[in-house]
Figure 1 (cartoon, rainbow over the protein chains, first blue to last red):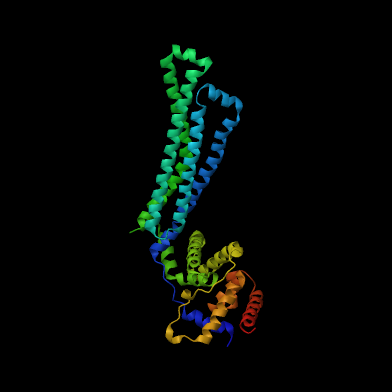
Figure 2 (tube, each protein chain N blue to C red):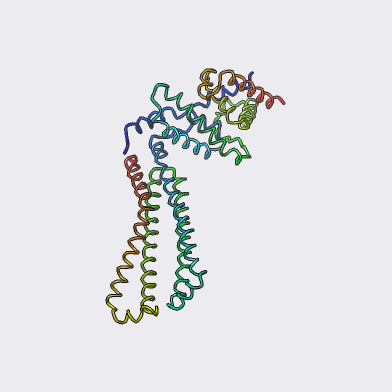
Length: 205
Length: 164
């Protein structure tokens, strides 16, 4: 008997032996694009980490800047914040990575929805953390400038209220700029995730 | 939004899913890989669905897209697969028609097929699906003569493996 004929016989026999996939599962597969969105979140956060944290480190390598920080009594503070930030951001990146793994392996629509909610939550925490940190550090840096910068501190003593208000607005503007930055970077991705989530919700009848 | 075309696609895919399962069976060796490939083919089919105008049958179209996906995916992953195991759970046989000699032969055949290259696998698949050479050549985008030549070569290969 021809080899292929033996095979064909067996092939036909097992033709209907496959576990059947349900319509719901097929819908789930079509909405796997969430995983590519989460992949982008991970990629962008890693790139952001590489660029911005290298920038952080570079100020410690610049002697002039280091001396200025020492003069303003914020050298130790800056050092602490940089290291702290490093660790926290790595933890966030680890979580983004875990989300991606979870979404890739999730088999049911319900689980996929849960993973999307988790991802959105972590990205929101991430943005909030960054904004709070930027707010606190810029406020402290500006304040130390007012207090210890030789060119400014005598003026500060005279026009204290004016300086405090000015500093306050400056911090607000910085926060706004960062907020816009994150909104552009992650906002679009989050909205897509949300859209996908809404579609999944309709499937999960 | 759950659109009409999406609903139509899902319905047709569900009805014809055995085509994809069969492709997966030939191109993968374990249940996880089977699932992965099934999902990949589903996504590729959905992406290509807007171009499917219905002038060919859904099944014919699914054969083409499915095999193309398996072939490209297989090419990408080829070098990472070095051990090929025959998954017995994949091969459901009932007790009463169990024939040891034939079973051994089949095992050998399936493992021989797993050693074929991607195009050869596609040829075997279409042959097992009772497609004639015209259809085979159309689906794989090769000439009929080429399909025949390749098919004979595959038969020779399999014969050699079974009768060393």
